[in-house]
Image (cartoon, rainbow, N blue to C red; front, top):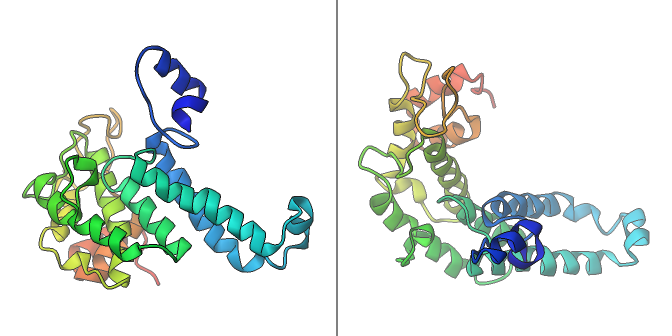
Length: 239
């Protein structure tokens, strides 16, 4: 419980403020928890046969998996719904999808429906059907002041949207989804630079959005030649 068990949380608490989180603060907890879930998924098949692990822990493979699923996956899901895992839009949603897919049991249909259709009182928990219209401008620009933070939305929505689409929820059929990708390209000036507003890039300039996975997802769903050209400049057009 980061609020009460971290030095920073205690310091803020002493001044009358609360900074929630789980192992780390609520924003960083999104990436850490997702990484833990994905790592567990990657080694799941090897746990039963790992004699060194069994000796070190004094547990069977089943006991080890049960421990991880209860204390990382299920605890992480609880932390999502209690606000201890909460980042910029798309970050915590992506974490929940990864946790749910790795856990494999639970009311995942209800959770995923909420990710699409939740009409929450807070912007951070809006379903994508509302967020694409309430939090994102007509041109596809999310509502933060920095192109770097805005691209974080595109990156994360793209990531968990791709996973949901594989599960039968067609996120990319939504009319405004494509504008998220288009806006990243429309901001580029002189073929090299994204405006360095907010805390994006530096005084030397640079380009925001050069993430191959994000635009590989975009190209798979839309086949837009602009996305292929953008991938080409990243040397990311292979298999």
